Length: 113
Image 1: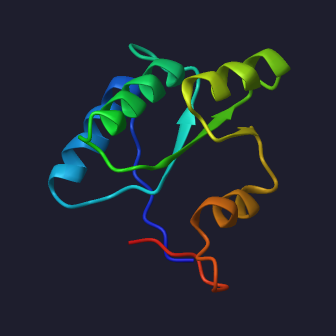
Image 2: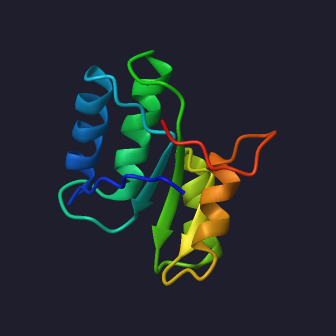
C-alpha cells in the first residue's frame, strides 16, 4: 500500500488543504474526517466539501468519519451530511476500510494517485 497521508488540525484547514491541493493537481480519493475538531467540526467540513463537489469545484471523493463517537445518532448524522462510512477509534479494521474505498475493482492493489 503506497499511501501518503496529509494532516489537518481542524475542519476549516482540512477543506482549505483539499481545495488548494486540488488546484495543484493533487486529488484525494478518501478523506478520514474527525468529527470533533476546533473552528469547524467534521460535519461542517464534510458539508462544505460536498457543496464544492456539487458546484464542480472538487472531484468526487469518499469522506469517512473517524471518531470515538459511536452512537447510532452520530452515524446517522454522518450519513446525512454525506459521509460514506463511520470508523470508531481505535479501529482494528483500518486496512479493511482503506481497501473498501480505494481498491481497484479488478486488482488486489490499492490505487492511490
